[in-house]
Length: 336
Image (cartoon, rainbow, N blue to C red; front, side, top):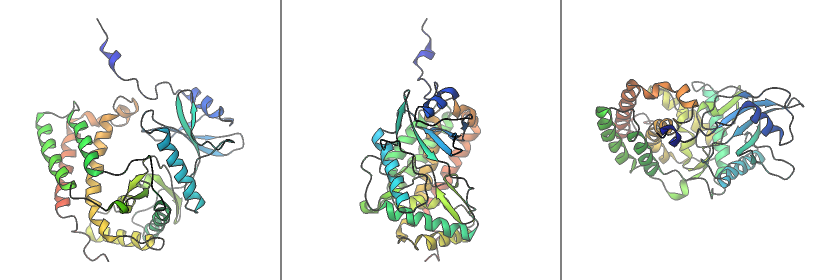
């Protein structure tokens, strides 16, 4: 009798033991007097290390098969360009040959200087203004040229792909599958109207939640450009608008845009994309969890994905987004 488990894909980081992490890093010429500390990352494997010169680094092992070498190199080159323009980011370490992407033992890895700090407070006007300035300065660099290898944001195509991943998953019961398919189809139709001019797409961070912004007081830096892509500028701004009450969210938006426009003009027309981008992220996040389930880190971190209650809640959120997209400008009145 054949073992059905033999057909299951091998987990992507199955062979990445702590010893292999140390050996891979030391093969680049660093010596580690202590053990690497695994950071809270799932898509890749990321470790905080310090070398014998007491320098602190973040070692990033890229998920096999996700990005090509050319796409990763564009991420690194963009970071170098940002740093050269005095945008606070963690640009990758390069060896004596100028290489920032390293192939060791079947894995691809890069080293980044560790940037200490805390996440910003999104109810603090001073922090919001500073974040706007940070994004504006990054986008001023991002608009200089285009990525040639990294993706371009395509809401409709990416959501179509994501909803198929969810519909093929084993966890939705018959009722949930029917409701999810109906609701996601309506959202997909609405997303078809969320369009922008080709020249509005610039190089952006792509995943600007507060976990990827670190600093102290009102001085912040951007980290983790793993999702960098070509997209409208608002893609890096909307996740800073977290308040539920319309007047509070307007305050957040006003502070962010005031800071942003110290560095770069912002097209207010892009604000109409916010609810579409929120919908996009909501659908894609669940699909991402489903697609990564063979990675042992995911069932451990997200056990609720297999529970009926999670999918009921997710479907309700999608229904709420349908309403929000039907009235996407309801909270922006008065923002000039």
